[in-house]
Picture (tube, rainbow over the protein chains, first blue to last red):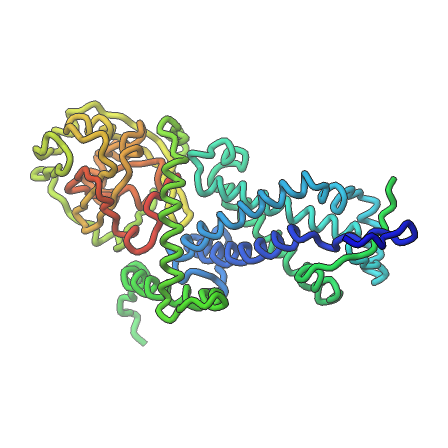
Length: 213
Length: 252
């Protein structure tokens, strides 16, 4: 390491640490497989009066979709646990996602709707914090309700918490709907602010402007 | 304009053909998304690499589920008020094609790693201690229904025929051409029964007369109906749906 980070220049830090980038893309790939195969599984016995178009589903038939779903499940869950452990122990959650206050979210929502919300690389505004923390909780809910649907006998306490087998299917569906909703907003925002995409792929650093309390 | 319309084919009539079509689409569906792995240079022209990987994961999931399976954990039981009426009919054929089995001449065949291979008539099975359960039948498709089944605890029956306790599988052959198999731990689970009654009556034809396996710790397709023969073995006998690609263990 060079020593030219003198007292006059601030330290630089990663916009997205490599572990965040890695787990982000593994999660994205696993989630696409989970959602598309999940739609095919849903179609075998819909709980609402509609089916998903066959062409946007994965697996070809119920057995194929289940094979995809329960293969990608391991990738999703192992990656999620790794990310959660990293987030908790590295300070990533505390530093980048918290705090989320109603006042802060309200302030930034108003600013965003007026197109006056600054988007500083390496720093999440309150709307981003809410969305990212929210989708993490939705993924955890999707896993918990999914385990209840998969193993209502072995994980019967979890299934009971979900309101029983049939109710767990509804929770699982709603968690999926929330995640897909996040996905759409997320993609739209990246299209509006495209400079946010490269740092999530190739990394990069920003000057550490954080004021230590 | 004639008021008499020709009979329209029902979806049930087409079900076997649809299932076959779906099976072929399975390969095609895998191929299109399998294109993702083109990046790694795999040859996907035959769609084999993806299907093989998926089936390898399915075998891994069999192991994971066997490890998760707690032989003492009971499926939730319900009251008579919870029973789903009418209980849905489900098979790979429509209801009218359910097999007709003559209970008077019926004899259950027993073979494989067992000490006693004599055949069992309905009365012989009814002479064994009977148990009842009201449990939830969960279909691989996602729907579920609560029903009441009574019959012989399968563990008791396995003891009577002197089944090898170290054997790994029990296989079933059915009067309708269906076949399936389960692991020995599930076979000995206290809620796994050879069901002879549905509700207060003998099992009706549509639900598997004269005898079906009721396993509340497995998905519906692992509950074979109209069982004509069973055998104890160390070679996984597979099953009608399992051999088409459904996960073999399919535990609940």
